[in-house]
Image (cartoon, rainbow, N blue to C red; front, side, top):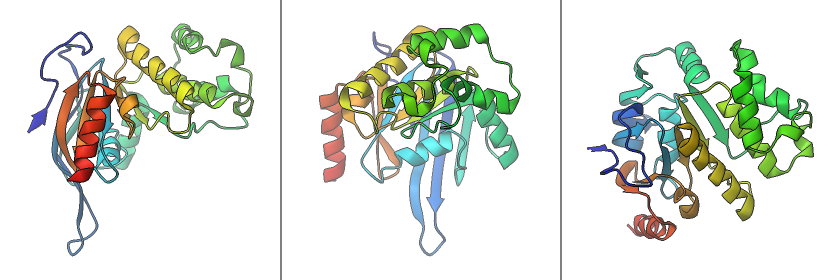
Length: 257
């Protein structure tokens, strides 16, 4: 079964282009005697310019879905396309180049280089790749996240929220097709986490960026246009513009099963 948004709504972009398409994706770890199925025949379409949250209890397969969707891991079977590029059969070198050119990452740990300034951290992936940076766009992003006066500071001189905002700009610096965010508010206090989520949502609504976020937090997932609920390696439900209460109910039901 292929999951997509069921109908356009005021909170869900109705877009025809596809950022990611997963078809019958299965991921099995272990050997024949002790197989562990992390993803079980998952099909999912992520529209361009949407904010999608992947939620589920521990062991539901949400992190594996992110790793396969972001070309960090290869599925056992099935196909994955990112911005029209089929990942099936790509060598590790080609998958690395695809991640460099098409994907941005935001992690729970900010992964900033402590000895580099914020400005140097933001441009590091592009410089390592030899890519040209749109300086006007970068300046706009830096201003948007409120770091214009922090570019010459070291990461240790910034708060956790400021470091995560720097990590978000770094992910966006090369204008990726998709940004994957893995528990981006997990290391932040409640207020700062809300600010980061508001920023991610605004980047989608205002700039058309595609964001896929994995989170265990129903309140965080409720900031997305839609939430994909997972359990036992499968998608159990896709909710457009859900509330935190709706998501909490779904997650509690999954844990009780």
